[in-house]
Image (cartoon, rainbow, N blue to C red; front, side, top):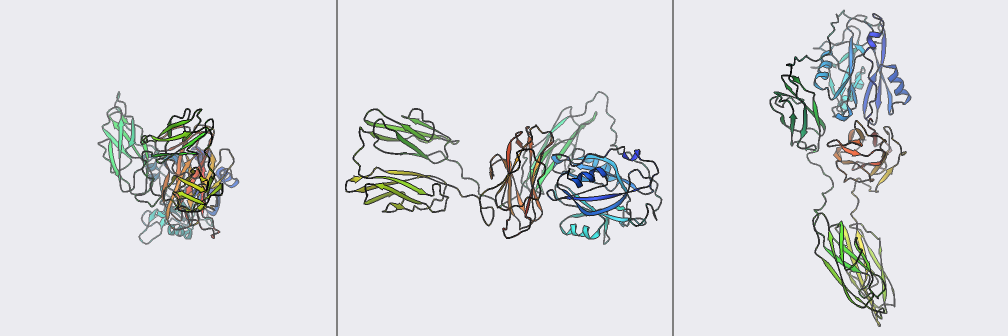
Length: 615
């Protein structure tokens, strides 16, 4: 996934004139598709966001004043910045409030949060007990979205902060116990920098990990980490196993509940979504690099489509276009089988490989034809039929053809069979359908599959041959909403596309067509869907080469509702455990179903975004 912003240069602060006192405006932006907020004081980033170089971001109108990173003002401390890696399910920026918090993020989450700068702008700290800001500075409130994709909103507007808390955000900072919780303090727009502020000496603290003194000649361990289940259900357990070289004597896990004495750890999931677990091994030579495994916790119970019926061995019958074929003409035999066969083997019909056998004989007499059908479960019992070949057609006064309407009915729907006959028949005998006329309405079917309907018509001269029609009953499409309307395809240009936002959903089933870039990716791509309104219900999302195909694995599903997000990760041209692999320069569909849709509601109800990965 493309990073939204390049890291600010770390030499920025030292390149400014020492002792210069300036302020800078910190501007807030919002991305509707991600449902993320972002702040920046960098003029280049602001320009790229305003001009659409970085798609999907708009100003919220919120901003506050900070001290410029190169200014030396007593009490003003540099704010560091991290970028959450998309392959860890993040794609967001984070601004720690204190130096201690900055150091902790670097040391505890090196494989999750990428360190970008130690000084993007400067702010003041409130009293850590009361949350009160010094002098004439104003509070900066911080609220976390309480979601796995980890995004924060920073604002000096108390009413905006309270509105975020009402949406389920969690406030972070100093204070509490009946007093406002404040993360940092900004410059008051109506007061000069440093006015009324106490002089606080700045003691530089290097942001480096605690050094490890290795034993000469001993190589630190190199580990890999595996999970016994990449898609466990919430409330169940997953066992992580580290395999390391060079005999580790300790294991440093990302989870505090894991023992440092063993390379195995069993954890219980408590929340739906992606979770990255890491471990690194240590010995007398020091600690090796941290390695991780990405686990996607699934809902404990969901109300989704019923599972498909277990496959069975095929069972077949053979249908014939005539029981008394004329020599030197074609006899057409069709195998009608249950169990969805994948192959057919015919005896007595040279060259036939599918369900249909077309053959001819040069002499009179009886000839037997046999078929055996095969699926993943096994082979059917051989099924045979015998045809009596004659020199000339038998004297039949009646001949009929059956026409079904519709041709492929849906389970539960009505089917009408109508026979068109020559010879003015006076009697009609149906098989698999109850009627004494040339028209028949059979009983609707409850299972998908093919069913043969047969008619024998007669007049004073005799009876017709058994006219046959093979009707395939179809499964109905899954009912994703109050008005099932099939599959709607949204088509985009056949090029690698940036994030798509603001797509109005106007059908319960939708397939968003996109094309992968023509290269092998190093990172992960992400297809995201966001639901804005509606009650909670089960929603499914999948990526497939077919529109509205929900059988492609792995897909995602969750209980969705107002403000919820579902996303599917993918690679391009490479394989990664637990992630969908897509091929370069290929058309795919991001398929969605099961969300609430109200055609009478004019509001935007759903949005989709597709991020392409880095090459």
